[in-house]
Length: 367
Image (cartoon, rainbow, N blue to C red):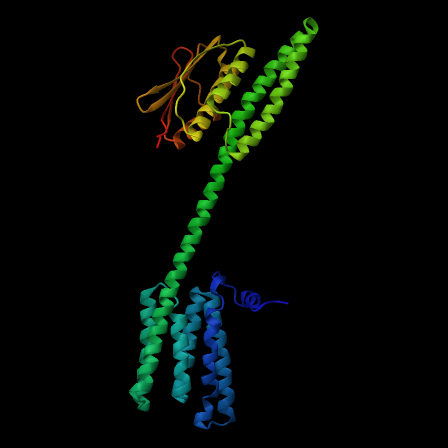
């Protein structure tokens, strides 16, 4: 069975379903309009016309709040026409309709349009009050209600627009966060799998060459392949979770193993530095990508890794004596730059003799 809210959403669709009930709570005051013929001792025809006009007026009122835009403007203008006719026939009942017109016409952030609606309503009210010699207490109170309801709905419309803008801004922030997270996962998976698959390929090739000459050595290499693939699975899971638990020096040990398998000598000059977990994670990923590039593309014999402190900066250099060159940067180097930029770091690529990557980032401040 449908709830009242669901029926309202189906019959009068609107974007502001948070306050779907607001236009409905004022409808009981229409009771005075429907019974107003009692005070004028009207005949049956007057009752029928009055009731029909009230039903049409309510429908226009709900449409104005449910649709908005030009539909709201058109509905309000028709409501004003009905109210003007009703006041000329029965001032006591018809004047109530002006308050509803004020509610729909003022639910906007366009002050010029609101001022025009209010001016027309007040003119209708004062014209008939003067024509029928209505006491000030009666038409003055109705004037007050028209103004108060109009101002209240105007500020309600402003509040609604601000909430809608905030909702759109939050949706955009959420979308950008999802995009950034997808890009982070893509970069991490590229770095993790690129390094690991290169190592697996090297060890598999070595095992294939040794299988006839030294079966025991080939067996050991294939066991390393198995361990490496299991470690890769764990790295992928860590990449999706968004952290690295082993740190820079654990990554350096893996880099040494990968370089030795490829026949590259590694020379290290590193000192312990006070790095934040995020900084250490980024440096570890940068080292992994750089070593992967050395193994895959450099055709190098020697690789040097240097990690030192210079003033308030951490400086990491990764150099090889390979072919170098000014080839365009691939996804790996672009991913390095993005990671370093996110924590205030920088990357410089030198290709004079071999390739040298110079990474600098501010050291984490200690409390």
